[in-house]
Image (cartoon, rainbow, N blue to C red; front, side, top):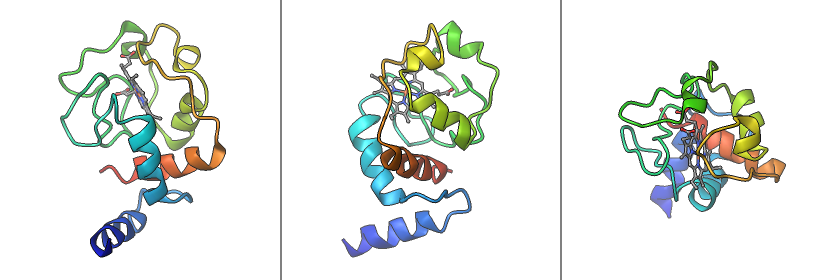
Length: 121
Ligand code: HEC
């Protein structure tokens, strides 16, 4: 527990952190995203690795076979863009995507999750 506390303390101090709670966000990630996504660099599952996702251009994780919809999405994953994308069904945010996710409608969980994603660098 002490080690986990130190670890999350370090993550909160990361310059990429937003206002949410990164350790709560890690739990949201585990329950909502980890079935399909790994936070580890280079580790693709059903979905691409989310290492360094904040600031990464869409559809560019190495060695991942994206749908045409995401390959042709010409945006960069800013915190605002991720907020917009994850707050609604993925198929609505990016028609044709193969991400099967209905969106996270709890505003606090979404904020915490975004803070956590910002620490993945
Ligand atoms: C059922 C599996 C599944 C779940 C659950 C899921 N995703 Fe995905 N995700 C995918 C797949 C598959 C893709 C690739 C989509 C494509 O190529 O169209 C993807 C793509 C993404 C992308 C774009 C990545 C890039 O490189 O452009 C982001 C960001 C993302 N997911 C975030 C999340 C987050 C955060 C969660 C949890 C809140 C989540 N996803 C839940 C399967 C999933």
